[in-house]
Length: 321
Image 1 (cartoon, rainbow, N blue to C red):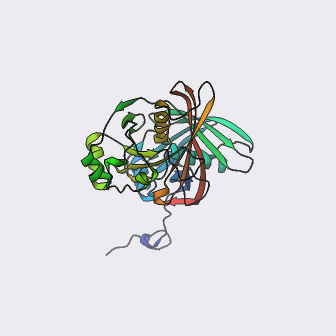
Image 2 (image 1 turned 90 degrees about the horizontal axis):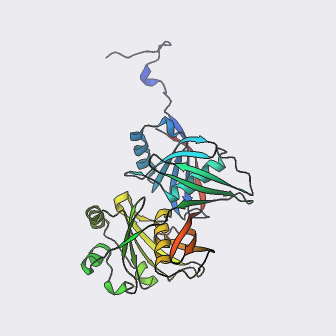
Image 3 (image 1 turned 90 degrees about the vertical axis):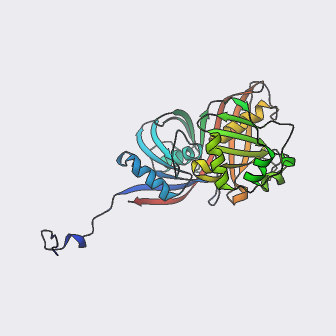
């Protein structure tokens, strides 16, 4: 056996070779406390990471989203978002974490008490983001999103029982089940009561196969009964196809939900006056979340839609590979 030696005669195998490491944060998005909201990781040195390694890191982080910062050019941010199984075209909760992290670390110079407009770019999409650095140090992030269009959909009684262990009697029959496609495809299912939403118990293996066959990324059940009296709607979202069996909080899906509520006359504000939808999510998996949507209604058609909230840091350090 021959050992390869360095210039000091020490075997190379005994030398500590430093592993690459990247600045890393983990945030709970859509929550003003830890142990709530939806986790999102941030790697700030994204340009140095290959696409394959990005996916590998996202699987290791095991958050619903991991964001890789590719470039910061004043008020233009270039980034990529990954779940544990795929790259996202855009990510609402990841955007909250990203903008909060960039502000906290000083990549974005936004003094307390001021609000800045930021442009976020992914390889396939761009969006406007409003970042408000509050006087108390918290950062409110609102993502501007387009309205969505809907088409009729359905779940038959057997699917409801087999996939979700739900009963057809629990459906809100005065409202339709509808499907929409934006950055993701969503099936929206109205339920009659809070208890009916809380009692759902999905078979995630079967649900994954169903979503693959039907080309559905997420299934959201909701009702207008809420746990917190000040909120507008209670919801649960299931997304095993994208790598997150139950989603604690999601911005893009709640955009679709807010548009659905407006479409069916469940929001009463009219005229050129902004209205607010407060969606509570994640309660059933002990990660309570609040997703806020501001929009203006033209009849039942929402315009100028902004979705967002707060994010709370839970980890700050380095990620070594």
